[in-house]
Length: 249
Image 1 (cartoon, helix red, strand yellow):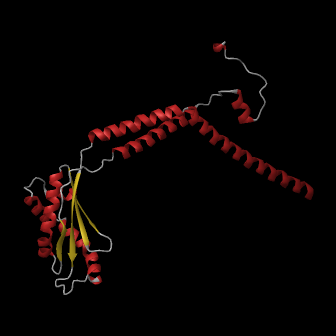
Image 2 (cartoon, rainbow, N blue to C red):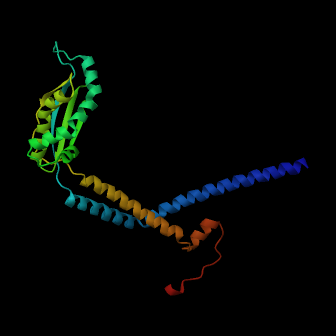
């Protein structure tokens, strides 16, 4: 009885091992089949990638509007009376902590309306707010003011107005601090690099992926047997004979 149980356990273990091996072989075959699918229809993948990528690049190139940038930098000082020319580390830390407050003040509606009046009300405060960005230099109390616009001169005028009006606005709202101008804004005649090439590359990859997905789905739902080799490979059975295709005779 014990011998029969032992033999049964061995058979069960062997069956489990064979099943696992068969699953591994099927998985390997499936991966090989997918690779063969892609290699067979490589031309379709290339065509789709070129069409989508080229179309995305051309559309972006034709519809994109050149953007120009102008920037100015200011120095944030939190000490009302500076008795030495040395930069105090406490002052730097205080300035970094207060930097979000300064940015909020310079992004506020009253201040940007002043800037709008300064440049002849060509843009309202909402437009100027969307065109302007602020960034602080790492481990410093220096604030960079950057403006992007479709017109290079407008970008320059807005950046220059913000940097020159900032000291008065900070003194008006925030006691105990000041802003000093470091670099004036300059007008740039060269537009910013467009993202057309990047978008074209993304479209190229997306087109290739879409073509691969279509090929995969078509082959997955196509249950027809295409060759005798496919039968023998899939089921491990010998082929005794084949019926010729009468349409090809």
